[in-house]
Length: 236
Ligand code: CA
Image 1 (cartoon, rainbow, N blue to C red):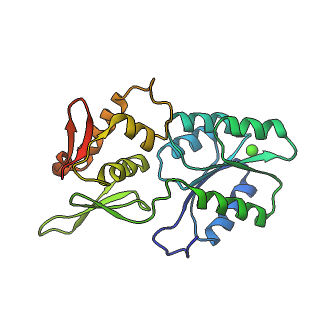
Image 2: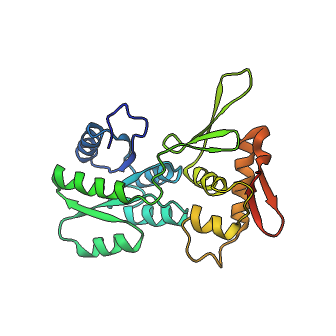
Image 3: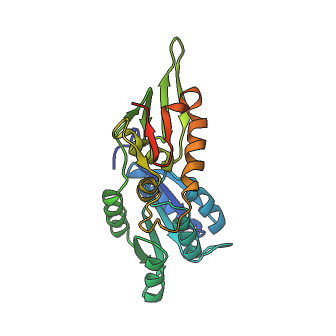
């Protein structure tokens, strides 16, 4: 993890109702250079997590409104693939098994030591499959995955930034890899949604996301071309 002023600071969401643990975690990870946001309730945590752009979510199990298992399950159902670290009660193997079943990546048992926690957090951040930290270009845009934004220098004007979700960043990355090359909806579902079994998924989901993305890109939105019956491509 970089220094606090590093542009590629890791964004970590902590969902924990116990103030002392929440605060302790936030302090330790801020000190390690992470950008921290917190939520106290499960429903609030889920809403923030689904917004995307997180490198890691630390999730307690016993939470008001919505427990950690349900939060994790719904988060995965929404297509979010960021690593989730569960906080479980000591020695509760059922919790650990259930945590993995709903899509958690790892766990630490309470009470945990700072060193153990840091080791787990760093391991998860390292193996993050979609750790998109370097910027890339997409047509006239410069995409910054760390900030989840698209920047464009309009002629005679100051540069203009457009906020993106982490999935939109991924979609642009996939489409932008080979301009002019058609990417199928299935491929987009597999790569941007992390879905292995896409046969039963409605590909219209992709169309809706592409439509939103075009709207966000404004007058440049048409650089994402629809290829009838095939998919989408970045206008070469
Ligand atoms: Ca709790």
